[in-house]
Each structure stands twice: as structure tokens, then as C-alpha cells.
Image (cartoon, rainbow, N blue to C red; front, side, top):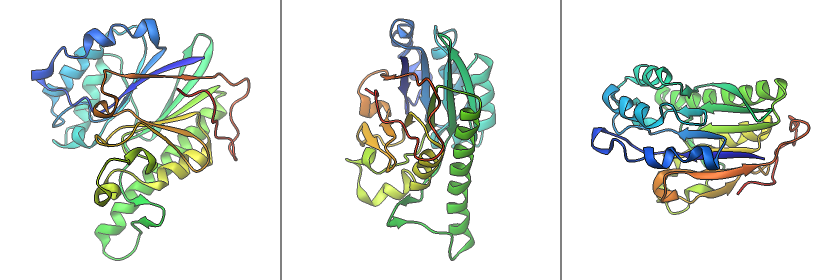
Length: 257
């Protein structure tokens, strides 16, 4: 069993320095890794990124992150990434990483993702160039997520996790105003997860949403935005497969708390 701790939307700044560290210091007792699902800062500044780095530096478990829209606000996403990587955080965007945990190869594929909406009420690549660019960006994020998940399968990962900031499903947006659903996620992310296969999909972004959801292919989805969780992080238990899930119809459905 792999114990996955996850949280997103912590929105740290100098004023909140030290707020999460006491809870994070307990991770060695209850989790095997920590996933950060974006919006780690308030405005995407280097100063704020350093606050995040101090919260997670030297933790007893590996830390894997994606950035969120707030982390892009100051157009310093590369600098924010560099600050986090200096303390050992693996920051993913359109790629995956493999962790060896208690002899098990655990793969995490990550992308920030983007909006666009969900089946039946979604944007399309039609009309103005701005609209086409919007949807193409989301499609590119989804395609990179699928490719990363497939690559992790080829690397014999017994557990595979999709980590995004934007939501792949509307289920975990329940509680948010319907009018803003298109800006909270995209069905293309769920299609990527279902096509490539995964054991769990984790996202943030929807502060007023719900924790539990599922893709059409049966992959469990968890919204780990901290305002939804109401605590420092959540822990999910994933069974270890003797063989990786298949690419076609291989989404795992069991054992996620």
C-alpha cells in the first residue's frame, strides 16, 4: 500500500510563513510522499516561493508539485520552479517522475492543466484566434499528461498518479457556481487519464468544490484544495499492482480513501 499525502491551494506568503510546517513534519508517520496541487503562492513571486520552499525543505518524504494559476501571476513561474527545486521539490509540467518507495516504483505525471469546460458545455477550437489558442493550450496540457502516464507505464510503475491544478471532472466542482466551471477545468484532462490509465487523479483550484469524484473510465479523482479539505493535507491509500494498469480500459478503481 502506498500512502499519498496531497494538498493544493495553500497560497503561502511571508505573513503565513511556518503555518504548515508542524503538520508537514508529521508526514513520515502517515505518508510515503507529498503531492502539491498548485497555487502554492498568492501572487507567484520569488519571495512567496521561498516561503513555500522553507515549509517543505528537508521533509521526511519526497515532494512532487505542479504550479497553479496564482503561481503564474507575476510571470515568474520559472523562477518559482527554481526556488522549489533548490530544496528538492520535483516540479512537473508536461512530464512525469518515478519514485522508489519501499521497493515499489511510483510514477507521478503532472501538468498545471487549464480550463475549457466539460462534455456538452465546453469551448472548441473555432472562431477567433484567442479562442482557438485557449482550447489548444488545454489540449496540449492533456496530451502531455497522457504521454507522461504512458511513459510511466513503460517504466513499470506499479502505481501511477495524475497530478494537475485544474480539474479533470465536474464532480469535484460541486459547490462552485456553474458559470465558472469552464475556468476550473476541462474534460480533456479526464480523457487523458482514462486513455493512458492511472490509479488516482489529484487536483486543486476549486476552493468551493467537493473532495470526491471519478472520471468516466473509473479513475478516482480527489480535489485537494486546502479550503475543501479543511486541514493541512489529506492521505489516500493506493494498492500496489503486481502488473501496471493497461493502456486501454485500465483505469484502477479500488483502494482510494
